[in-house]
Image 1 (cartoon, rainbow, N blue to C red):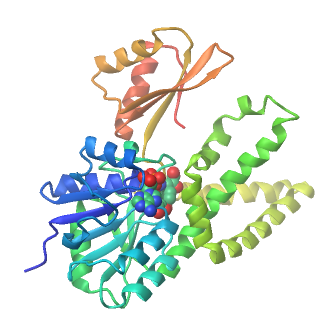
Image 2 (tube, protein in one colour):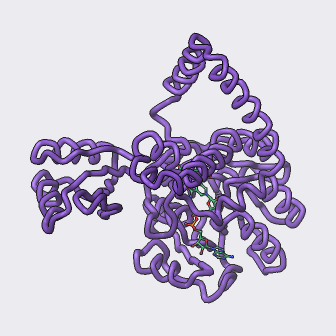
Image 3 (tube, rainbow, N blue to C red):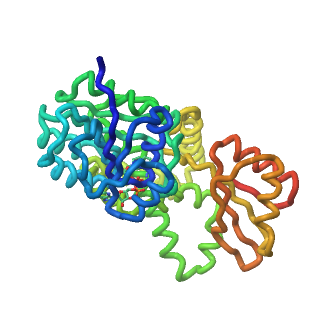
Length: 370
Ligand SMILES: NC(=O)C1=CN([C@@H]2O[C@H](COP(=O)(O)OP(=O)(O)OC[C@H]3O[C@@H](n4cnc5c(N)ncnc54)[C@H](O)[C@@H]3O)[C@@H](O)[C@H]2O)C=CC1
Ligand SMILES: O=C(O)C(=O)Cc1ccc(O)cc1
């Protein structure tokens, strides 16, 4: 009979750790999840929100009875925890997995520490957000997303099956890859784009002194392309450090790309510029829409609202009338003290679209997605 997972020890109770715990609980309510976070307040929030059943007394408290250990910390921390885990007393049948955005360093290090002795299976759920913390965790964060697993020669088929089974509440699609391929692909579609997003923000920042209006004008496309620059700096620092070699190659590739388009602009080569954008559009438009990739899974709707008392209750009142549930609400910006931007978050895309139609039906307020 296949081994049952009855107890999980989860280290790192943030967006990803919390979302995995919620997804596991949804499918297996009887699995006991004991959680630890270096930040005690995150652990307490996780317990209050019933994301976990119990707070571990310390990082490894009670770990000797865990059937599954999940490491959901920033990737540099994951390396240190693996190192410390190697001297802990663990169940013989324990499976250890992580959720880090890089896989090569972690898999290599885990193999060197655990060898054939402990089943370590690297993992990376390919969905998330620029938001951090357990408060943003959601059971369906990974629904339809790819969940990459990087088994090695040390991995048994049975452990892989058990891990996929306990994670089935994520409703993600499991894909197996080598750690090297993982880091190359995520370097191109996730890590390097983060660098570009942050660099565009820096570039705009440099112009702010000479053009103070720049912040207020930086809407629309600039907001879209730079959204991910609002992600956790600690998390991204670690990812870049881990994937240095692949990223250095991508810097060279990007510089080649920039030079190519620079020459077209310099030469006022309209036809070639048209083709440049057309080809990019064709590729972008051809990306599959059904699956979630490294895309936002928070369904936010922004509403430009006049800055007067009562406007929030007015809008929430219309949504309540049509029985549309909001998961979060926040005023994120006031403009010239006349207008504010209200951010409403929903569980699903369908709710967000219904909310947009509802607000447009009852008001003249302008609504937009991120
Ligand atoms: N944010 C995202 O969209 C995605 C992140 N990931 C990966 O998931 C991991 C976690 O990221 P998030 O949940 O987004 O970050 P987060 O910042 O929401 O949560 C990380 C948690 O780990 C805790 N932590 C840090 N060091 C610790 C330690 N030594 N012991 C115990 N807890 C510790 C922090 O206090 C924090 O609560 C990272 O490795 C990241 O690369 C993977 C997929 C998507
Ligand atoms: O916010 C976004 O769109 C992201 O890019 C989320 C994300 C961050 C890190 C990952 O390893 C995977 C997905």
